[in-house]
Every structure is written in C-alpha cells, then in structure tokens.
Amino acid sequence: MRGHAGEPTHVVVLASLGAPQRVRLGRPRRRRRAAPPQPPPTPVATARVTLIAARQFDGRGEAERWLARVDLEAEIAEALAALNRLLQLQRIATADATVRDVGRGQALAARVGVGVGEQVAEGRWARAVDVGAPQRRRRSAVLHPDERLSALLAGRDAALACEELALRARSDLAGGRHREAALQLHIALAAALRELAPWAPRADLAVRLEELRGLQPAVDAAAAAALEGGLDDDANAAVEHGLRRLEAALRARSAVAFD
Image (cartoon, rainbow, N blue to C red; front, side, top):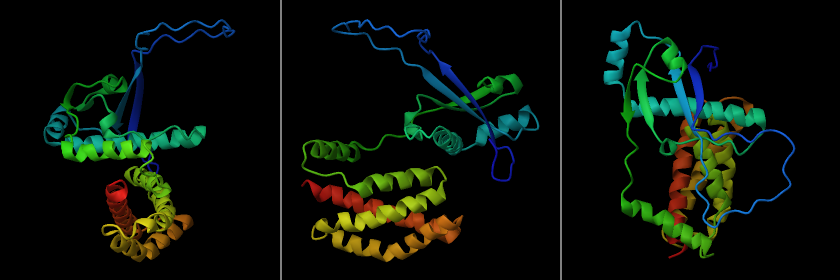
C-alpha cells in the first residue's frame, strides 16, 4: 500500500485459516437434501490480516526497544485504518456495498510484534505481544441499546434516516475519509433538523436543534469544499465537531423517544 505521494506505507499479508473444503466445480446438483433436526455448526474460516510497516529497523536491538515502548492500542488503530483503507478500495473496485469496514471489537485476537524477512511475509513474527480486548463498557451503558432495540422491534420507536447517515459519516471519519464524511454529514444534518423537530418540546431537544442550526453553515461549507477537492484543518474540525453534536442530539432523542 502506498500513500498519496507514492511512498510505501504498509505491506498487507492476508491468509484464511481453517477454511472448509470448497465444493467442487461442476454441474449443480438438483437433488435436495433434507437438513437434520439439529444440524451441527457449519465450519467457519478465520481471516488473518498482518499489517507490516514499510519502514525497517536498523537492527534487532532497535526493534526490541520499539516493541517495549510502543503504544499498543495506537499501533492497532493505525493498522485498522490501513486495513479499512484496503477494504474501501475493494468496495469501490468490486462495486460491492456489502464490503464494510471492520472495528477493533471484531478481532478475535490482536498482536503487535516484530520480525524479519520471511517471517513477516508469512504473517508471523520473531516476538509479539498479545493485546487484550478493549475494556468493556459499564453494564448500565450497555443496557440502553438493548432497550432501544426492543422498542424498535415493537414499533414503540422509529429508526431515523439521519441516524444511519450519521453512522456512515462516523465510519468515514474513523477511516480517514474526510471528504466523504463531510458529504455524509451535510445530508445527515439536514435530515436531522427535519426528523428531530417533532421531539423538540421534549427534554432539551429544542436547545440542541438550535445548536445544530448554528453549526449548519460550517458543515455546508465543509461539504462544498469536499466537492471541490480537499478539506483544510478548519473544515475537518467543523465536520468532527458537527458530527459529535449531532450524535449527542440523537442520543438525547433516543433516550426520550420510548419513555
């Protein structure tokens, strides 16, 4: 993988582990087979992705010192950003909208390590550190999404278009796709100002809507800049701030929507 200036940034090594045997090519069988009442779990292949930094260490000693002091979560975040960049390019190349970004919580295991030559080329290492799963949120913070899902399924609440658009903007921003994030936020904010209006009398949503209206000119300007090419630091900051305030308003709305 290369950056905008053509400089190599990462080498990506992909492998499938424990993949079930593929069905042989040929004429499809027309005969249907009955499924057992209690079928065994279907084997699932596991993907292993190794992101190797293009820069090399001067020697084993430097590599060991780097591994001893590196911020493990920051290193994993950088690797995930590179992987999601690859997935974005695959999504575009295949025109397949189902190819989605991956998150830290989806990894079965995460490791940061160092290695040489053939080791890293095969997705292996000379020494590595296992990085545990991210710290779980407090139980009180986890319950609310389950309650909201129950309300959505029961028809006591409605999923808004602006919620899905805001999630896409957040995904783009997390993936470093600032132009796409600005364009997504532009339409998400416009939709939110209309969709949240019926809830304005409840809680403090009227104040939040007024805040969002005040942020709209900066968000619109960032979207216009995205259409022209790139965003400067001020436009990126406006997108980040606008998205955070929109997400806060959506959380406030969901908290009172099915009370």
